[in-house]
Image 1 (cartoon, helix red, strand yellow):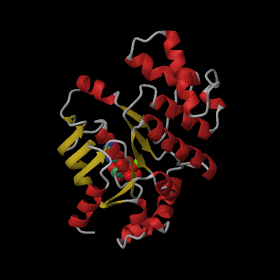
Image 2: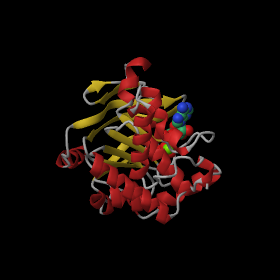
Image 3: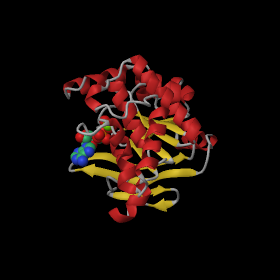
Image 4: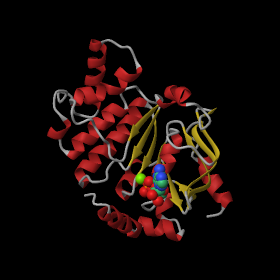
Length: 273
Ligand SMILES: Nc1ncnc2c1ncn2[C@@H]1O[C@H](COP(=O)(O)OP(=O)(O)O)[C@@H](O)[C@H]1O
Ligand SMILES: [Mg+2]
């Protein structure tokens, strides 16, 4: 796809003003060039899906968005503020605008579900115990797990743990939720529960969602917009429907599930389910 048509597609999905922007971001690890002059805007209220092969740099993109990684060159903006040059201290406030569901969705195993969800609230606010308990209950209700406060993470299924991690990600009422492969390792039914939740949170909380996935069912179900990362660049930017009919070879492979097979093979090699 030419730069021109990519631009017109991006402009036609004008959901809101840009809330997150990468401008000319490049990043390498040693000799590995992961991002090459990447520019992308995510708009307020949209659900954008990032696809791409395993190792393409999708998680690296998310980490730049919350400034867990710094670009070698280029700029990162959140709500119009440049964040890649901020100190860790300045970033504390910026990061509370984000909810981050990490790839491994790690919960603290030694504390209860309720304490896990309460964790960011205790870290970042001085709210009372009663007030925190009320919020925890609200957030758990949102993900359909109200009443499980006193369980330990080990007592839950994989899908439930993901939902607890999601309740924790929304504990501080973020404006933007970043999801890193939220359905990986879940069966289709549990994956669909997560997809429904992503849609629900976007509708009910009005959040901007940026979702990394290799799950085509998720892309079709939740995406307002899909961007595809390949060899350090975004090679596609359009709606899921436009993705289905794209004549870009790499996009076609992905849609037809060939890239997905490769990726699953990669995951198996790493010893994940
Ligand atoms: N902190 C790091 N140090 C060195 N290499 C890294 C680091 N983070 C990511 N990489 C490498 O960058 C590439 C992209 O990683 P990642 O964004 O995790 O891929 P994915 O698209 O699967 O999420 C991979 O080859 C990975 O090994
Ligand atoms: Mg990743």
